[in-house]
Length: 259
Image (cartoon, rainbow, N blue to C red; front, side):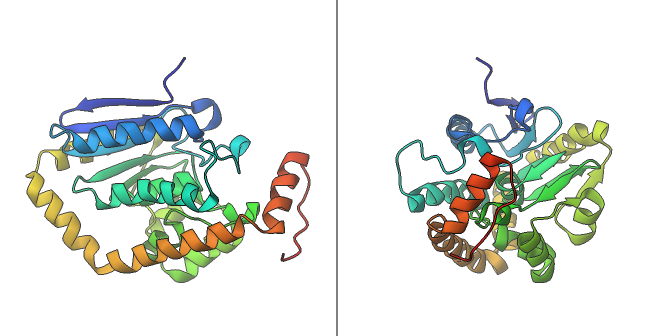
């Protein structure tokens, strides 16, 4: 069976590659579990000075696999399901190691939030970024409403969250959702060059720099993520969420009733 997440260390850079290209690297429970294992390994390894997140194939990550939408592999509550995924995002944000994301194609939903948790985002010109959870009767729940607001401001974040519309690479760069845009054939080399450059710097300096730069927003972001947890737990119980899932299965337009 093909590994759903790949991992290697190159010049002090832990390279984590999402490897489900046939579904634009959508994350199912197995892939999420394997990602957590590899993430923990990278964070615990002193040989890894920086981490680069990539996606195999045409996309970075299209979010949670819609075929398992609403499924709880551990038979856990909605609250604990969301909390567990939030803890994964916070682990990246709180890590003293810098994270760089190489973004291409679909960067959607949870995939977008994974990218937002990183410190630097390099995108290719074919980027399509979105927070489309509203189409499913829910909202972003692993930092999307909070981190995106610190990057692009409240009005633009409201547009993305309330419409679920995608933005292209030029818009993402102009708004500040990504830091660099390059042609697709240059993406891997540019992202790796940045990661290598950072990995070569003093680790303590990197850790302190990340802490100091994140400090002005750290408390507000974490408070907001806690609110995402409560909101999403409630939304999972609404009739509109059930209607959205049914409409997806039945390939029809949902009819929302505000219940």
